Length: 126
Image (cartoon, rainbow, N blue to C red):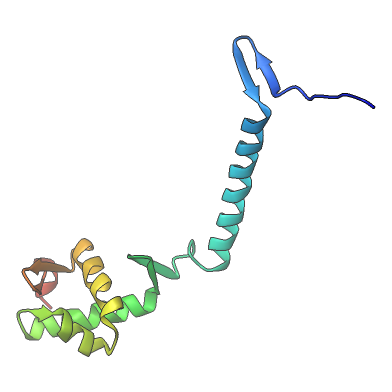
């Protein structure tokens, strides 16, 4: 029977030693990045088709644009809007409406004041 024990060190360069498990770990990370990048492209994440609005929610850019326009039009007619009013306006669940409003806050479309949102200054004029 042959007694063979592989060397755990893959490469030695002076005092630097690279172990095989480190090489395998690096290969695993590189492969996972390639797979994730391909999957993201396949799902349209890098083409700008989907917009990440937060809380693990992505929406089609056209839906986000339509929601923004409805919000702007509504807030030009009345001074403020509550989450429940925006939910009714979009006929959507609070699960999606609240992250969308927070996204609009971060994009400078709205400003949160207590329980309501008001239109940011740059969107107030027609």
